[in-house]
Amino acid sequence: MKMLKGGYMGNKNKMETRNLNLYYKGFQALINVSLPIKENTVTALIGPSGCGKSTFLRTLNRMNDVIDGTRIEGEVLLDNDSIYDVGVDPVVLRKKVGMVFQRPNPFPMSIYDNIAYGPRIHGHKKKDTLNEIVENSLRAAALWDEVKDRLHKSALGLSGGQQQRLVIARVLAVDPQVILMDEPASALDPISTAKLEDLIHQLKSNYTIVIVTHNMQQAARVSDFTGFFLNGEMIEYDVTNTIFTAPRIKRTEDYITGRFG
Amino acid sequence: MVRESFQEQLSKLRNDILQMGNLVENAIDMAAVALVNQDLELAEKVVMEDDNIDRLQMAIESMCLSLLALQQPMARDLRFISTALKINTDLERMGDYARNISKIVLKIGSEPLIKPLVDLPRMAELAQQMVRENLTAFVKQDRDLALQAAMHDREINKLYKNTFTELAELMARDASTIKQSIYLLFIARYLERIGDHATNLSEWIIYMITGERLELGDMSSVVR
Ligand SMILES: Nc1ncnc2c1ncn2[C@@H]1O[C@H](COP(=O)(O)OP(=O)(O)O)[C@@H](O)[C@H]1O
Ligand SMILES: [Mg+2]
View 1 (cartoon, rainbow over the protein chains, first blue to last red):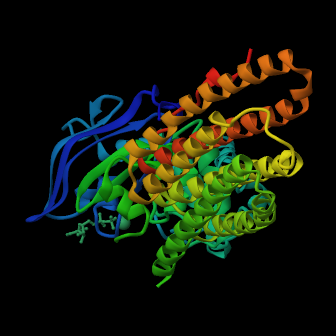
View 2: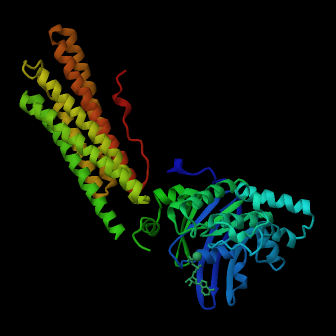
View 3: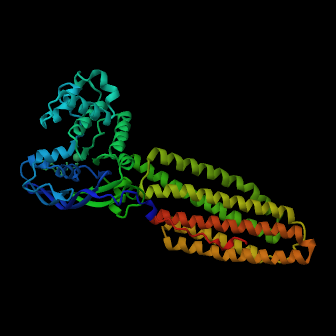
């Protein structure tokens, strides 16, 4: 078993949750979740619909704050500092911990302006700087070659797969450290999905990635670590290889072999 | 439902492996009986029936490959199918050795034996026991039994060394025994190899049950 261990065990915890509980009014959606998120790795969260994957992901950049009646207990750390401390500005936090959603959501503006939007808000005004950010972000999102001749056309004219990479470029443009992805490929065809998975693989050398996916083969392909959630609890967390070849816990095994869920 | 037919295919695979195991166990048994009784007809039968083993091996292999490609199994299903794929190959090789032994019987079966055969049939018996115990372990998910099966390989190896020494002495004493001695030595070697493949069965079956990769091979059989 030892020989199966991935080479990322020694990476430091970029983020970490400790005994995390989350309540939507009276309903407890997360129960005592403790999970490390290793720097420069991809962590996949799997589990049946409604088990709390998206809720958990949103706690990592305080996106739940905007949902009324949400209460949280326990700790969420970024570089060992609590992100729920009073001094933390959620807007600054979300710049460091960016998010990509299930459906690509480009703004109804040009490709260029989609990418420049965040940097402008954060105070970049100079044309040269913006040009550079736009190009670098599109390159990093493996989209540059496909759109460089139509940067000023509407982003809505892009294919679904291109839109999803555009959204990733938009996240990259504000120079994040962690990227959260909530079922980012679920609306994409197989070729766009493969491109997105390649991109995730490339991005992890510079960023830390957490991806929620209902596609277990995808989790197996892209991630270094996998956490299995069930009814708000994190049942098992391990090196992805171990989870998919020899998980320790029967409920994990039953789920990934399709025996329930 | 897709998953239901997947379960059906898995149980068909399990049955095919058991069938494969039975054929191989029989082949070893018949080869040993043919040797001791100098039964040429039985030896001929083993050689002929090896084709059935080869055919079943191909069928099992294709089934495993299509299950891997089409169902993309995970965890215990993945371990089960990869184990089937691996032990299928080991069983087929064991069948080949039984056939090789029988071919030798066809060559030496009409001449008087140079010595009473005790160790060789004992080795064959132990090999069969290893197959039988492993197949039971495979079906019952019994790790201890698979481990126990592997332990018999030690004794096979000991018998192999005995046979080696004994036949070497015989050849040195009496040159007229050399030809048959060499044939018997080959048979001993084949039985020893069968024991090694049977040890692989144990390793893979234990992997299937728990996910551990153990190295159970006994290196004491290497003649120095
Ligand atoms: N805004 C909300 N208000 C109340 N309950 C919610 C809210 N969002 C999610 N839930 C509930 O929390 C549980 C977890 O949901 P979610 O995190 O979306 O699961 P997943 O992403 O694993 O499908 C579900 O039972 C869901 O109904
Ligand atoms: Mg969700």
